[in-house]
Image (cartoon, rainbow, N blue to C red; front, side):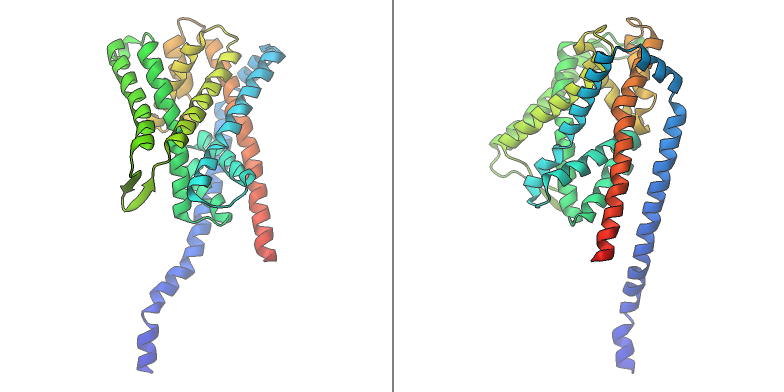
Length: 326
């Protein structure tokens, strides 16, 4: 009797932990869905829909279609980012499933921030498809590097070669911005050089080993990311109907992207508009800038989010049906 008790006693804490774990996971995802609903409602309240509607009505149909096409092209391109991770990790999920997961995560990331949107949704969706946490981590790491690699190069070149006159209260001189731009571009090119030239392309971070891709893959990452940021800027440029130079729009967008990350505001709500008005308010009427950017949000943020929420719900329903029938 005592021998049996001695054998079973150490197992009780583990059994209790296993019993509580499903409840903790359910509570976390219930909170996630509640936050998703709250953010959707909150963002809908913060958008001046009458201004969006008026701006969209004033836009010629060809302009609206062209901007929508560029937004679709950007989301479609970003959906291929995780395919690079598919090759690196070696999993066999179909490309269509990988792209769907990436699209959903990207839309959530844009509107709810990286941690709640991009990270949590990827772990859940890829987990549903049978990938382990380490595999998902490696996929996300490669995708994040891809996204910011193009930013570093484009931002570096834009800041170094086409510095904008900044507001005096920002207390940043053109020289400082140009030096920062040169450093950003150097980091991007240094990454590509390291991938191409280093013999041991392995990095260890907190006990986890990550392998750098080949030089060819690094160049592909750089090209994909540069094209994606260019498409995003092109969407705003088209909506502005060429009233500002494309390079100016791209440079301001890149500055606003950093501001959005630093402030941790979901979807950069208000940050994007504030940066554009601060830098370009003397060239275009602030009301026109804000109206155009609200139209951009409707096309690039909210429309994809609506599709992503629908796709996410369908994904969850199908997973529950498969689990029930298994």
